[in-house]
Length: 540
Image 1 (tube, rainbow, N blue to C red):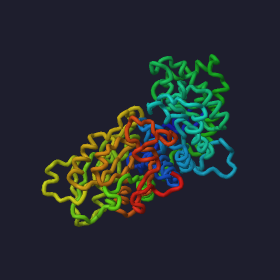
Image 2: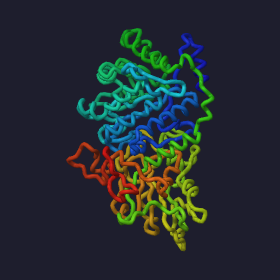
Image 3: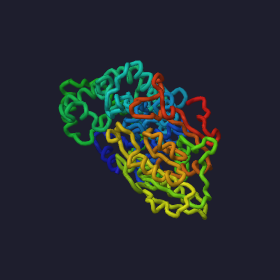
Image 4: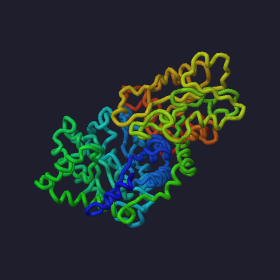
């Protein structure tokens, strides 16, 4: 498909090749059979910058194998409120953790050589893709965590908290930066000349191109889509170099040309945008090699790629409780016990495990791609004599006469994206708490929480269960979970976000120390060695 578009571009008057971009935000997640990595919040729990770089390298190969040149990643948002529907796209509430995770840029694009000019885009070769730091800037700091909302904050705080990771991306030669749908102190970022041009381009010295978000220009006026001519003028003059116009492209082109002809968009602004776009295309080698390299198809979801995703899952898991008595740990589980109950909405649902931005925009339930569910992984790892009973929602009959050694119950969030994920209540969806409670009343229970953010954990529920593991949105490799809960590997993950007691406390994050009274603090995570303390670590 992409080669077809490319051939048409090469036959055009100037023959300038196009670049095709995709939302490859946790692997090449729109393509069936690709390796799906944990979403960013889980990766943030690993604190492992080298792992992130390697995830970028694998993602680049699998994106290139599909013919695309450009990945809209990484999202370097600092999510300050879990009510935000894009919380899971953020590595952490903490700027320093997100800064470490910008190593994805080097993974996707390759390592710039010593002396590479500051601010200039870089791409190592045909096995790399153009990266995109997003969403500039403050997308994770909006009031009440409202998606596309308003970040009300001083410039100094905007720079210190939200802008800092962009400096790291620019120093790694990031080719593109995407503007945010959100506003800063009431002014939309897509029309913000001060931030896009005076700060990003002039002060920070960014020489790549600034791209709009999907249909973002339509959102600049109220009602949405009105006064389109004004929207185009304000965005382009503010410093947007490339515009994502999925539907109204004929109207866009007509109004855009007219604005240039009338001088309302100056020719100097067009020259700047074209220079930046061509600079990235030259750096990316698209002129020399415009068409796909089909030899890369063999690497998609190859064993080393699956193993890396599995390792990422292992390292992302956060152990919040291990035993009703701290002196008697519940985990690791015994693989060779007689009878195990596996239950819950998320125990055998690959789509739920992957979350949003997988197979479709919103994500969906079921066997949406190749991969291993938690149930698949448990069946694979337990002893030959062990009987595994699976019930989505166990009934009283399930327990009658069945002497289960323990239960593994997986519950959590169904897939969502963007505004559809905004949630002021943050309760475990799909009656998750009730399901856990009904099983824990009968059998010693490990709960695995599949979630893109901290959720409400009532004290009575925490007391009732024996162990609690947060697996975030782990992606296609469920064996990473069984690797750790059965004790082949230890727990490594630490909370990338503060786990609140009640939504009334929100926003609650490190930095608001006066009222910092969390259920579990930022950086918390038990492991098999310490049986109950924080993971011993220098950098929380």
